[in-house]
Length: 406
Image (cartoon, rainbow, N blue to C red; front, side, top):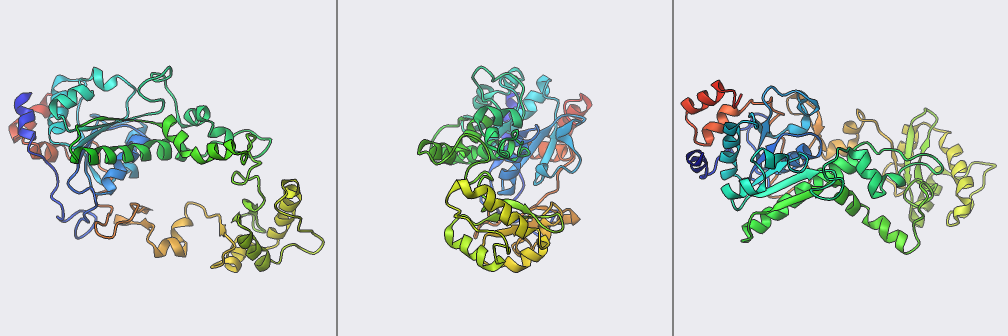
């Protein structure tokens, strides 16, 4: 074990600037030169790893031998921009392989329940004994401690306990799950990626390696900071669907058009609302335009706007209001979004090898990012990664024969 780790301590990884499979050359993102080990999971952990990989880090995903399960969907775009090594983590030899990679890495990401990696011999203490400068990122829903830490949960459960789910939905109706974007990816994976980058910055400034405990309940609560601030000063009511930003205000809502499709109206400020009124000719003959500042008028005002918007199709309204400060946008579906002129002009979506997908974000003027690699098959790069780690062909063959790697 010691010999294997020592052979890997000199660093391993791809060479920046060399040709990549998705283009003539790989762009060097701001995290070029950073090495990350990802213990394969689902949802927020892979999203955090994707963010780091999109930003240029060399991320190696340690998959299960044989794959399988929701987290191993073929071509899963969350797994882009990295390589895959398939290892049996339940064997002593598999543990040695991972610790060997840890010796030359800057960070590790895992998304198991608390205590699982410790039982595998790959917990923070094990990894820091091998590499004291390692940033050890942990992704869970409930966190590493607390009464619920060891129980199962999903995005909807974490949103429920933080109060965030309570605030999403129409007045007088039940809460509506906002897909899993708010919890898994916003409060979870994005927070983990930020935490890992911050800890890496600290290490490069002389701090020791440390554990980043990213819990979705923590992250979602932070995302809701403004709502808590508004409640504190009496500007947000606890019932859902009656507030300025939750669909309660008729000038911040969606409306059905003549063709059954919808517009999103966000004319919050008076000057934007005045522009909307001017361009649309609001109200229709026979309707009134009550004072929008009095919430008591909101039901009547919403009904008047609803009648107006049903007089034209979505795209007719979008054409009329395009380029204005009325703060109106057509509600596009998943297929329409990449074709919108603004998103197309900014290349918000890319299609390497004909596979449409969101482009990496944010953008950097001096260290541009790109989609450099397609999602790998589990174990697609096992030999390549082990060879870079210093293992010779005979040793790799022996590990394969023993079923330790695949």
